[in-house]
Image 1 (cartoon, rainbow, N blue to C red):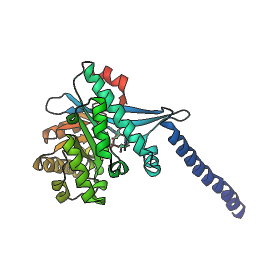
Image 2 (spheres, rainbow, N blue to C red; image 1 turned 90 degrees about the vertical axis):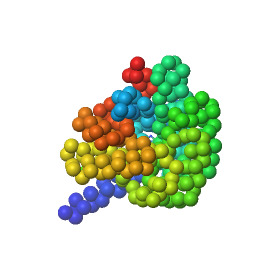
Image 3 (cartoon, rainbow, N blue to C red; image 1 turned 90 degrees about the horizontal axis):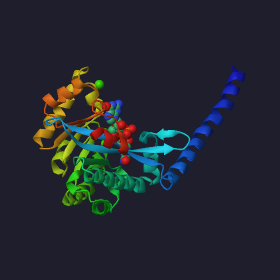
Length: 274
Ligand code: C2E
Ligand code: CA
Ligand code: CA
Ligand code: CA
């Protein structure tokens, strides 16, 4: 057992080092990825439940790594957030998506709303409203077409700053939605005070519709809350017809999920739309 323990130790240490080094390598590569043009924006359609029409898209960033292939955001967004890269990267995503969505409209496709995720660090940046204003001016995308998604976690960190930033964004005519709603701990009192326009029911609750009565009850409660506060409610992670029907019957405004379509590159989306 002792010998094995020794061998185990010898294998254990290099493994730890390898992982730390891999992380460091990835971090360095991430930093260059923006200049090297390795990021892409994919778009996931959102469907209005009353009209059945595609009303918008959510922009989701992808990293086309030369050796690893498509790296999902869960693997590099936290890293980008830690290192600060999220600021130029987030701006790049917003600029690229605004330009592309506006471009489809110019080419005769029905006008779409665009949702873009904002990380906590981007939200804390004092010039965020200025940056958004410049991107709108450059791209020609109408402010009313843009929706920025923030999470509940970010709201409670500094309520005063949150209210101030959200008000400045609202004055531009840009809408704000609360992403992953129900998973954080934003109190209803905050929600009433904040200039936000929409709630996104988290996938976690949508998942259980048709299987888990608690999840269905939570989804229903969020829809009811949204209606009371006159907020738009959109459900994400909708994978089945049953979930979509349930949500429509309970007054949800829009859905997004694999049931409608997966996120896809711009070229594919314009084909899918026409
Ligand atoms: P999110 O904002 O909650 O985005 C929705 C995620 O759910 C996306 O994962 C999407 O591909 C996935 N999804 C959509 N429909 C379904 C479905 O029906 N079933 C399942 N199982 N999944 C579905 P993705 O693209 O991997 O993004 C993960 C997270 O990374 C996002 O979660 C968001 O928090 C973050 N992210 C992505 N792009 C950006 C970005 O440009 N900036 C920032 N700050 N964060 C981003
Ligand atoms: Ca989102
Ligand atoms: Ca979400
Ligand atoms: Ca559940």
